[in-house]
Structure formats: structure tokens, C-alpha cells
Length: 166
Image 1 (cartoon, rainbow, N blue to C red):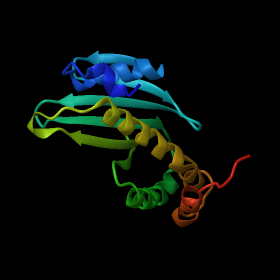
Image 2 (spheres, one colour):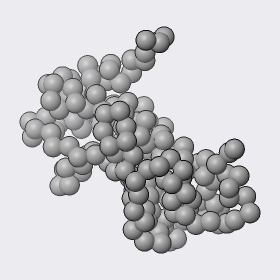
Image 3 (cartoon, rainbow, N blue to C red):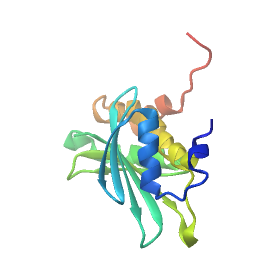
Image 4 (cartoon, one colour):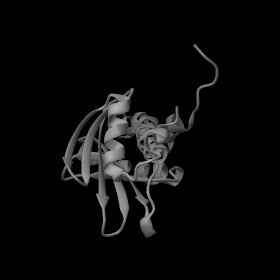
């Protein structure tokens, strides 16, 4: 059954849809308010903190996927160079490092102007893409910050795809 089949008769608030998706996937979540929800989504490398917030003002569903990170101060320049390479490959969303909060962040905004509504599949894809992007680049981030590798070397890990099965 498609995710949207549960919502065919209803016009739900985007955060209500996110809450249903969190329940469907058995993710830990906290409904912070009518327009915001926070979740913990388990990945291979980390547990990612994902927050989605609805803005009526600009009709945008904003998502922030983050994990804690405190790189050595002498590696910050290399980290930002890596972020530029990573963002060159991201068609939806972008990475940034919030130094004050010590967070690596992937963010995305789904604009629903003109009274459009998001489908459960769109929101699920948005969350899945965030986690997959974080998972894909996590080893490269580690190589740059803790392995003293260049951004170009580290990107080879993120670009490489495994073929076959073990």
C-alpha cells in the first residue's frame, strides 16, 4: 500500500504527515508544536537528529538533519573545502557546518506556494534523501577532520560505489 493511500480523503497539515511517517517507520519523535516535529533516525554511521518545521509565511516545509561534530580548529578550512565539493554533488539540499552549535547540518526546504500540499511520498523522500546524503558523506568528513586527508582524497570515498554483493 502506498503511503499516500492513508491520506486520500484528508487534507492534513505537513507536520501531521511527518508524524504519521515517523510512526510508520518507528522513529523516535517529539511533536514540538503545531508546526514543528523533531525525530531521531538511525543510520549506519550515526543517529541523525531531524527537525521539520512548517512556515505559513512562505509556505515552506523546512528540514534540518544534523549530527554533532567538533573538528580540530586547524581542519576547519579543509572541512569547508570538502563541504563545497559535497554541495556540488547535492541537487536537493545542502550541507553546512554550524560551528557555534558544533553541528554538521544538511538542510532542505520544500516550497509549497499557492496552497499546494505535500504528499507523504514527497516528505518521506525528503527525509530519506537527507539521511542517505549524510551517510554517503560521513566517511569523507571523518577523513578530512580526523584523518588529515585532503578534500579531494576524501571525496573519492564518497564517490566510490560498491558493486556486487558480499
